[in-house]
Image (cartoon, rainbow, N blue to C red; front, side, top):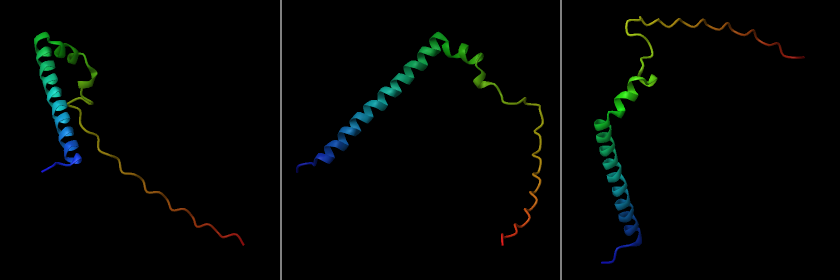
Amino acid sequence: MKKSFFHFLVRLCGIIGGIFVSFGRIYRILFAIYNLIFCKNKKSSENSEEHQPLMEQNQPVQPIQPVQPVQSVQSVQPIQ
């Protein structure tokens, strides 16, 4: 039984996607091992402002103030 061209394209995309994902995972594993060996990640994260808390831990949270209602607009008189 002959397979269609569409079936060939689907299998080809599956193979290419699988290779892409596999190499991505291998790269991430090797990168993590490299960082563990040379301790690059720990030194850069200690001084980074990205990991600083937004507010102090012991500071109480301020309640939200209610919004004042808008006074109704007076009706406009039609031009005669």
